[in-house]
Length: 64
Image 1: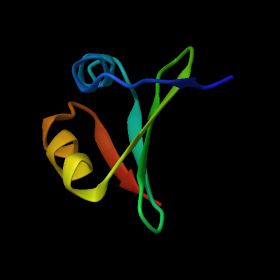
Image 2: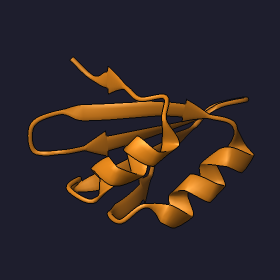
Image 3: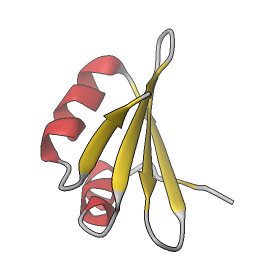
Image 4: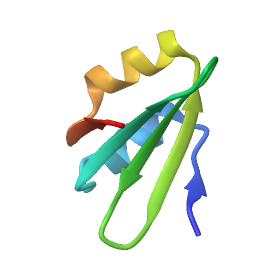
């Protein structure tokens, strides 16, 4: 079961141990998905906030 994260700082911290971050762009929301060896973490943001977070991530970013 995926865990939804609401804190940006925690999401960036988790990205250090993540294998990849998948980005799914919907109409008005961007969904970020971090895949770690044990769990999937998701976060929903607007497009501007997502761009800021993507610059800070420490794993591979894959656009889907």
